[in-house]
Image (tube, rainbow over all chains, first blue to last red; front, side, top):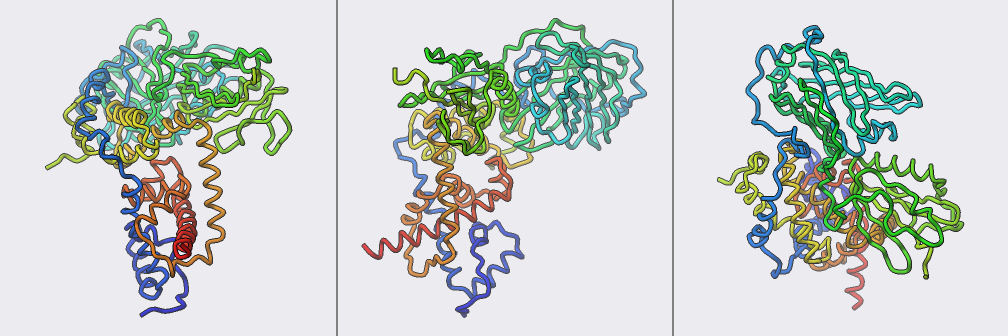
Length: 421
Length: 191
């Protein structure tokens, strides 16, 4: 029976009802309403057509390669690229992923601060890349380290602090029945190139880091040194296994891997993009820092293979304001100029989105640019209206549109000051 | 029996090309459809994008933690790859286009109250036609839910937006869609 005046339509819930995405109680309520309401039943029928409508929209011409044909081309590329177990890039020869280690020994399960007397030297070398590198040099604000809920950093006028806590997920390296916590706290002395802090590994609840660390910046690298007993070191490495990231896509995660070869390595990832890869070597003699050479590997095709440090194609007769801007470390470039003198430069950089934003903001500010207030219609005009990812910057008679979607997908757009020639 | 996706990923992480081949065959048709119309059938761009997506799967299989389904993870990679390819294809014009479209849909939504499908004769083709007129942001949430079968939370993971935003986009999409359907139906009656 149909009630001509049903009390409340269920329109907004209908799509998810038809898609089978509602809880049983919600379904029951909607079904009761549908029995009474012809209008909602009619709409329901429309939603039931949706899969077929999309099948029509998404049809691919038959002439396109089948999966079997495409596989042959793709398989050739596999031989050139190795998978990265645990998401770790093989950027460094020190990351030579060993087979998963045996179950942790009892010794490994009982690491506690009081079992780390200062006996043997342990050196941790962190080979840092890109955004994190810039961060340690004190150029970037806290957000450049990411948004891991348990990782915080501050960049104060007196130096920066990095405090990170990383939890194992499920079976622990140190105790198979609970999570591990690894924690690093570092503080940069004001105006100095040294850092002090501490590191701790805990089976179960996180505690106060207990292993004193002393860090020195060597150009682009941070070298950390400390002292722990060889027995503790052995325990730590015997319990080697992969750790799991603790946050989902959209947040930054730190993924540590402990190896029997006493190497800790990891990546900071943002969704599927590996942004920063680093290596910590425990129990080995200090090695001279090596300049980072790895490239962000997930740039789309079409970007330059070499890095650019300034915006290509900006040696204009009228002005050098665009040419003077420095780009973030390890930035690749693709040209996408449009007709009518609109210059669009696409970039793909290593690091986190926030690090790119911070770097460019700092550059623009230092070079005399300022953010154009929204709604300011006075010349110079920005080529585009700003949206949630973009900003309009002005420097005298010149403007630029800055669009930063992700670290690997950002661009600068402006009008060619020499156009028309 | 075919091995489940997570088992294949585990093997892929160890460099097992046979497992990669199986996953490739399993996902290629879906991803080809996903990429094809988003890149407007640009054959070389579609091919490049598909290769990049599967290369990412190959490279980063070891980083899959099972927090989402494998399909969600792969579509997340695909979604980001398509965005990059689109920006290569269209540059900034696309960005403006998307935002303008979304605003238009929102405007449509405001005047939805009186729309009724009572007289509409809706078939698959008309619906497809109307879906084309929807903004990309609104069409894609419907596509993920109704065509690829993802739950709203999974769509949120793929798009990197809060689950509430997915639901509000579905709501906006629905209202814009009803309005467009009513208009299309009225035109059909007139002609």
